[in-house]
Image (tube, rainbow, N blue to C red; front, side, top):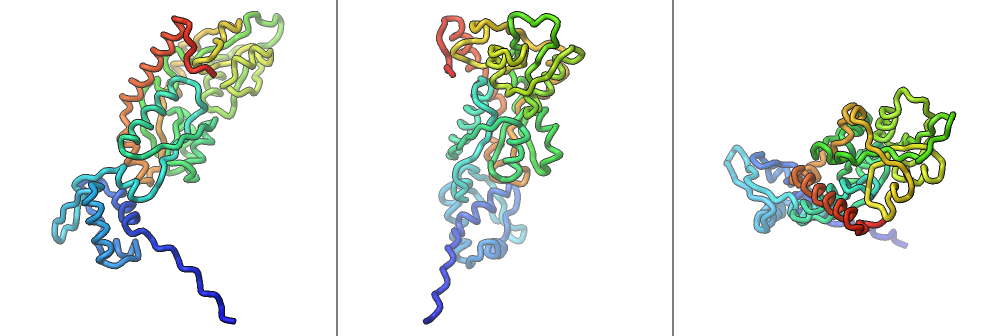
Amino acid sequence: MSAPAPLARPKRDVRAIVAQVLLTREVGQRIPTVQELQHTSHAGTGTVIKALRALEANGSVTLSSHGHQGTVVVARDAGQLWNEAQFGNFSLIMPPPGPVEQQGILETVQGSLARQGVPVVVQSLAGARRRLEELYLERADAVVTSAGAFTRHRDDFAGLTSLDLGDATFYSAGSLVVVEAPERREGNRIRVGIDRASYDHQLLTETEFAGQDVEFVEWRFVSAPAAVLRGRVDAAIWHAMPTVISPELAGLSVRRVSESTIRATRDVSRAVLVTRALDAGANALVRAVDPGEVAKAQGRLLRLVAAGEDDGTEVWPR
């Protein structure tokens, strides 16, 4: 009985391979020669030339030949090249949902990529280090963290780069508050909730309560009001967000984090969009994200929340 014929290897899409290569070339840079593209794509001269012409014809790229100096990129459409390269959806990992600032960042990034014709798939993951690890392991195209958290962890994840989205884009002015029980337990140390999985929360908490007689209790920062309400802790720092019932209405005391803490932890208030430095495709798309648009989106959403609080309208009930 004769041996079964080997399975045919799937034919590589030469146009997609060429598009991937072109994404690594900025405007003004020389592209590889046809011979080099042949080697990369394992295709013949005619097939490579046909792919280049097709990408020019559909507006993905504009090329200019300069004789022995090679062919140079005159213009390119990063979104079109991304789609031609068959990279699929752009994967973004965000912090846990809820805060207005995160919604503003997401809205801006999705809008920018939509204008480039690239859909965004969003996941949420608590802990900046965990998000950066997912990016480093190539399980995402970009992640959002605070600038402070990125600075703290980037030496552990070589090859990452960031786009600074501006001051107060991770925590807007006044959004960091201390939620406290209305009555303190006399004669006992203050039990303070702390989320050590979050670099930001740990830094903020240890700075805010420095020099005080406290007992730190591990608790997820997103549920700080619940921890105080249940009596698990006496106080915890919380990132204020729209809720069906505000902590104040639930009978808790809420005050802003001290100015000295804000000054000492300024970097954690700035958001950054982090990508892999060598991921030319993702960086080409992210470069079109305008940090100014992030601030505008967040400002508009914060005004909506304020208006809802003034007239009793529930905004984004959780």
